[in-house]
Image (cartoon, rainbow, N blue to C red; front, side, top):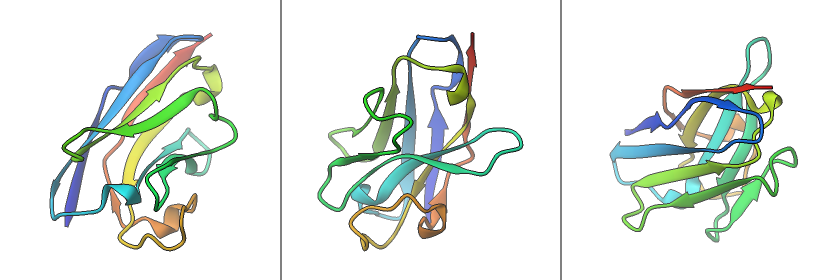
Length: 125
């Protein structure tokens, strides 16, 4: 079992930045299977960003150019740098990981096997 602990959430004004962290522990896993999802009140969980099988960033259209996924050199922490935040980015952000790296990339939450508890992001206009 892999455990994730997210941090870095908070309140920020529109146009501001936050960096979310996801610290992993427990069973060894492949960092290329990690990603970020978010869920706003009354809405479905949606994909934000992940790594592909080749270690490249893969992004939802709504965050492309503003968010960047990265990892620590030790590969046990994954980050989500969020710039130019908008009120519609406000949500509970989750870190997740999938055991299988097939397909090459995945935006489907059902493909992910391990989940953190989430960190709240609030963006005021």
